[in-house]
Length: 91
Image 1 (tube, rainbow, N blue to C red):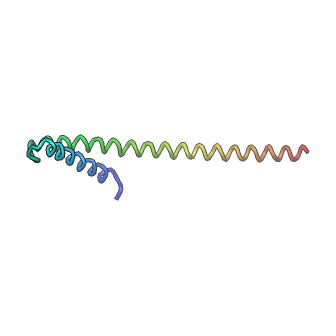
Image 2 (image 1 turned 30 degrees about the horizontal axis):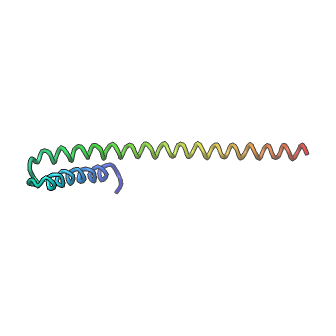
Image 3 (image 1 turned 180 degrees about the vertical axis):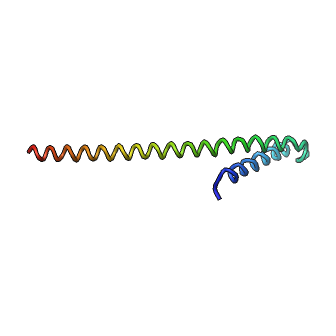
């Protein structure tokens, strides 16, 4: 199950946990002002969504670059083989 929903849900859980830990460090009630928990979870959910699509775009760019490099290697190999045949015919 890989997709944006589990990825973002993980970040939302992380955001909620960050808020609870912050309140625990301050020695305040853990569920004080529940709206701040929602804001923290929403913010981290947004971060998670951004990171998911950023990673997706980067993987696509890496695949394109890999394809380009392999194509260039193939062309270079063909050129060198043709050059070797020319040299063999000339000799």
